[in-house]
Image (cartoon, rainbow, N blue to C red; front, side, top):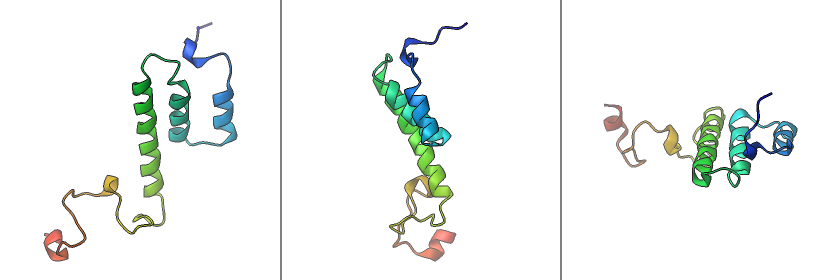
Amino acid sequence: MAQSPEHYGNNWKVGDFIVDQNLSFFQANAVKYICRCEHKGDKKMDLAKAIHYLQHELENTLLNSPNVNGPSGGIPASLQCFDDWNSEADAESFDR
């Protein structure tokens, strides 16, 4: 039988929480990396991984939202195609 790394621990409390909360793949991975970051060698790397998964969850949520423009009415930067777009730009010049 294979030995699990020490940072996995001998309990499944995090796994049980993930199942109990019915978390998505991205949410579950973020929780996993947050909970283990203090027990592995590189806390910054694990927190960056958690942020990476949370960004994917946010993008997935925004893309599947009935109101893609969000509550403020602005299109989230992660979904914008043009970095230099602003609300005062001429629509005709934008379409060119």
